[in-house]
Amino acid sequence: MGRRRAARAEPVRQHAGGAPLPTALVAVVNLASAKLAARFGPRVPMVAGQLVGTAGLLALLGVGAHTDVWAVAALMVPVGLGGALAVPALTAMLLDAVPADRAGTASAVLNTGRQVGGAIAVAVFGALLAGADTFLAGMRWSMLLAAAGLVLTAGATLTLPRAGRRGGKA
Image (tube, rainbow, N blue to C red; front, side):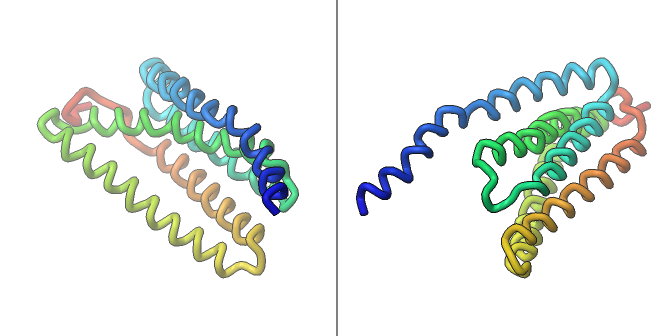
């Protein structure tokens, strides 16, 4: 029995070396988001990030019970990179839209909204997983719902007013 466990654990150890790569990619994309926002305005990286995340979620619909762990990891990368592209521009746009003396409050409201949204998503997606006939069916519904949400928010992002100077003045 000890041998069997060791044999199954070995591939996990072999794969662990590549685990930091997505984190490094997120750091690079965070920097790219700032450069894109400076050049094209914050809406471009926000919408691009939401659409990249959507593409990643839709790609995950093809994951099956026997999909290789590296394939799943590769398909998850665009989801994380999409967020890394969108969130810094969103934060900068928000902070640019409020007076400097309200920046702390605005940042707190944004982060609270993100935390509440994440908690609601965990509950909704958990319910979809628990209520589905199979894990894969629940996962697919979750991915579709998340992708639809990103498409809707990308559309809403396009309706935001152009960023003005600090303090909300156009």
